[in-house]
Structures are given as C-alpha cells and as structure tokens.
Length: 193
Image (cartoon, rainbow, N blue to C red):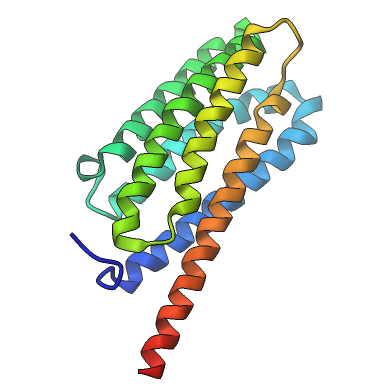
C-alpha cells in the first residue's frame, strides 16, 4: 500500500487534473441546465442522459490510472451504476420528469456511497480526500431529497437536478485545490530540506 509520500507525483498530478476536469464539466452542465436547457426540452433530455454517462466514463478513466476497475471496486460499482442510470434515464424520459428524478435519486444515493468509499480508500495514498468523502455523503442526502420530490405532485425539471451537480462541482474543485496546496507544501518542504 502506498503512503502519501510514496504516491508518485504523476499520480497526484493526474488526480488534480481529474478533479479539475470533473469540476469544469459539472459547472458547464449546471450552467446549461439553469439557462438554455430550460427552454429546450430536447437538449435537457440529452443532458439528463449524458450526466450519468459522463460519470461512468470519468470513473472508468480514473480507475484505469490506478490499476483498472477490477482493482478499484468502488469505482467499478460506480461505473456500472452510472451506465445503468444513463440507460434507465433514456428509457424513462417518455414517462416524464418525475420518473427521471426518481432514477437520479437512486443513482445519487448509490454513487454517493461509492464515491465516499473511494475517498476513504484514496486518503491513505493521497491525503486531502475529505471533500470527496463529504461529497459522497452529501450525494446520498441529495438522492433522498430527489426521491421525495419525485414522489410528490409538484412539477419537476432538470433544474431540480442541477443543484446536485453544482454541489458535485464544488466538491471536485475543493478536492483539486486541496491536492494542489498539499503538493505545494510538499515541494516547499523538499526544497527547504
């Protein structure tokens, strides 16, 4: 098992890039969800399928950098759940947004659990994973909230999912910045020594 000091700089750099990329994609998704997608249902439909599909791809790419899905069980489960979610969302779109929000709620609970487990596992090697752990827990709570809204009669839209994605973006940028600061401190200690 690698320790924080043993983790290669290239691995830490990849993780920072990965977190910044996840932040960027989520931020763009949220901006589109709150603006253009509200007036363009076909775009909203594509975005609703694309969001869990992107999550699956991101988990696959990240796991492939650290031994593959078979060595990273929580990411493998997150990958599978995200693929199933993308397919389920596509199939449920004709049944309305309440059905879509219900699927997103279940996905948020499950993917949050798997993200939390990934953060705990990574803490030993990379440190600075507290934001990812909090994000996983918050994802579970957001999923429960979405399930409650999906069971209600009030109209729902992509705008009810966007805050979930916005919190995800926030936690990804916090994780990236935390790793950036941690690496800067590590480099300054090395230079001073």
